[in-house]
Amino acid sequence: MAKRKRYKRTPIVRPKKYCRFKKSGIKYIDYKNPDFLMPFINEQGKLLPRRITGTSLKYQRKVAVAVKRCRHIALLPYVADQMK
Amino acid sequence: MAKTNYESVVVLTPVLSEKMMQEAVLSFEKLITENGGELIHKENWGLTKMAYPIQKKTTGFYQIFEFAAEPDAEIVDKLELAYRRDEQVLRYLCIKLDKHAVKYNERRRNGEFNKPKKADAPAAAKPVTTEKSAPVAEAKVSPANTEEEE
Image: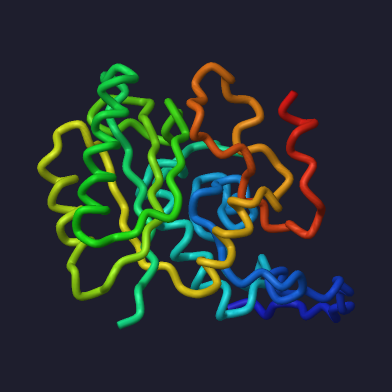
């Protein structure tokens, strides 16, 4: 096995993520508004992980439930090729 | 015992005429009120496009009920049974609302959210009961509903 050359990484400075629900004081996530849920799903209609959206665990759970409800009443697709 | 708030969304087939749809909605309403439920709010979105076809139909009549009832009255069971028996119902969803949701719905009803629900939807599809405000969560802006609707 060839030895891989190690690069010294320069740290990438990214703006700190924050939970948008905590920041703006939203307590309830409406499942009837697909437009509001759009930032939390990818273009295939899958839920985005917390590490990307920055949502806190408490609200990520609520987002997940809201998206699932929204899918059930056919306001969001379960599967999509390109939705954005 | 304290009453619990519930919310129920029903999707009815687009095959129905406006009148038949109203009738179906009325029957569900009656079921709620006759079983001791207190109808707080109802909303009709009219014919709405769905994200995926259900029973080969791409649109549906959306109807939303918000009601308060005793949890002992098993009103949700009865309502869901009625939905299941009704062939006009494509989809239904009944949920219990927590205190934040109740508050949120109240604010939504009072039009505190400034975005109209379906800006691009045909205006003709909107019945009288349609609430125009949309649940936009960045909601601290004062209502500017009326201007956008015109």
